[in-house]
Image 1 (cartoon, rainbow, N blue to C red):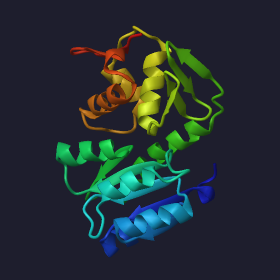
Image 2 (cartoon, helix red, strand yellow; image 1 turned 90 degrees about the vertical axis):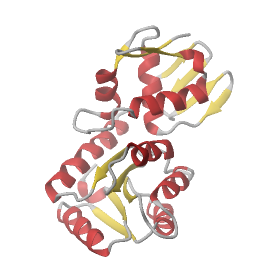
Image 3 (cartoon, one colour; image 1 turned 30 degrees about the horizontal axis):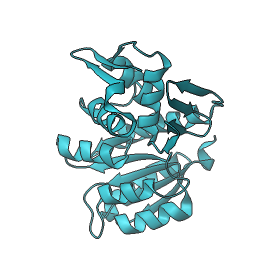
Image 4 (cartoon, rainbow, N blue to C red; image 1 turned 30 degrees about the vertical axis):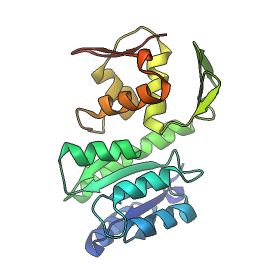
Length: 228
């Protein structure tokens, strides 16, 4: 996909930040839209169907966490890449963001070169997701359809955010194999993207709730494996 075809939505309540981010992204050739709060961001997301959303956490009317949750429920936006823009570095905001369905986060203040590097790394995921994936895999009572990004567990369809789906797909590719944490981060999040140390744990917890706790075994100090 060409840069001029990639749609990016910026959501932040600080006009100066919106202006700077929009200028740098537009200069690179991307189609950029902006919104000044979470509520407006949700509406713009519905209309624009962006490929990437850069979403501030602390905003009036509706914060970024709630906006992210609402965006993930909009048809056609389940796979949109969402990254939070936050001045806070606490684990809470990062984990809350991942729980809400975010793919990553960028810490303020962000330098233009760092921003562009991050955006390019995030958009590489978009390119990878466009590659034909026609495989329909059955593991025990679980059916994973990579073409439609669907998971059926014991006959019941389950909707998973992008990262949970990719993590499940990776672990089920070789049941009983222990995947090291660094391998999981590399395969699911990519080498260019730095995420919090507890990111995997949050996503595993979500999968346990949705797929079944007994399917996921923690190997302390090493990683995780999927068991039938």
